[in-house]
Length: 563
Image (cartoon, rainbow, N blue to C red; front, side, top):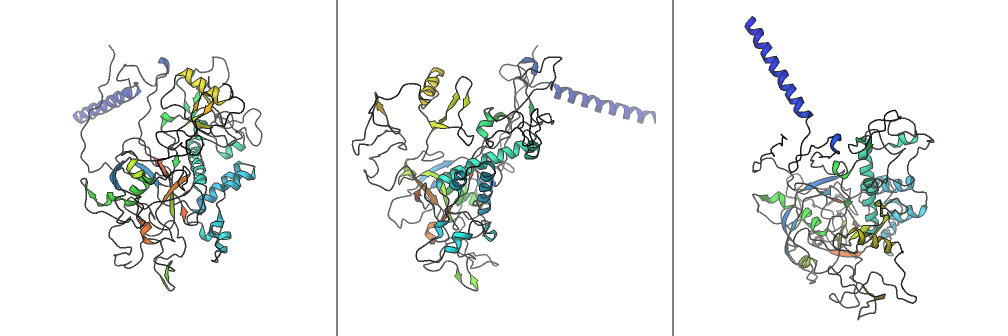
């Protein structure tokens, strides 16, 4: 009995000793591998080492593991003889993409948000889809003009009638609302209910707070928040993190002794911006060749987002059904009454048919989808082989107070972006001079000078194109050229406002279902056959599923112990 008690006592002591050692080690601060300085210690300046994370996708998105593929490789014919999608091997970085097309309900949420946050009707009107896209002189589509967007029967159908420009604003809205909701769920921002009570970060009513709280007059904006320009009473939540770099209030003064800070990029809490996918990303995701790949060998190519050369299901239970929503032939939008082959005459709900091997619904048919690229016939040949994209318009955020790094904001509370003036980081003196020039304090052009819309100047005189007399900027990417003689001369339907859309629609023949097929439309135009889905950049390691795959073992860095 005594022996058993002794063993039990010894084991208990060892367990307690182990727990003490573990707790002691947990209490020690991790040190820099290169300098040995302790991280996360408020007594040495508050050097912070943030927990490394691999963030999850934002709401509505699925992960797309990147890799190499042949852009334009699925095109089996060039029916227009326009040499438009020449095969070219490219590599796509891993990213996130919407599982479905954006629906009418999603857009109605956006309209409701605008109505709630802005009082002017102009903002709401500019965000309305053009429902007149359904109107045709020789077709009775007038009921869709009135009902397609708003009737609950169509709430899960893809939104149409939205221009490329409108989609850009939607992406900004979605980014900001998503990040605001994340911060509110973590208690780092006050919720609407808390704002209405006028609460502050310590949970009490703010001094001078009214029934409507003390919130900013503009909606939440991610960039403004990260720059420290969206905070204060009526905004900050009590769940904010402790600021190791801030000094606590002096002894004897009132207030919380722990100074707190808003979330920053290094916390890894906020999601990257929602955006349109690039053309190459969209085509890669539509093909989904990952489903036909084993040990880097692609066992079968595709001309549609599914296997095989046909457009009908080979499965026993669904044999013969059309695999996407498209136009089978002239005058045949859905088959014979009593047995509709694709179950749709116009658009179909966004969750229809089978998803492809990436889990994406309707990457062929239903509606064409806007992508981010500016159209050029030769893009496949000319773009870089890693993350190919055409349409970059590099910008910098305008500073309202350069000495403090505060952004200038527009009436929506968003940063004002100006065209980038340099291809590399400017010196501080150059930055100050650039900001003064943008604010109009660096002098004005002489009287009678011709306005220069983005072109280059010699002295104060803009350089004009020898072709048309318009300002001309020989930018190496070609996006800023008012006239680009390397295209078609001075008269062409292709310009910097021509944006690509892909995927085929309910009113297109099967040829346009091919992921490599591409068309373009002006960025402020809309159609009953064009919708969109969003994407998001994936940060961190590109491999999505690591289980069952070989990996090299890597040793952790040796802990530094000062002597």
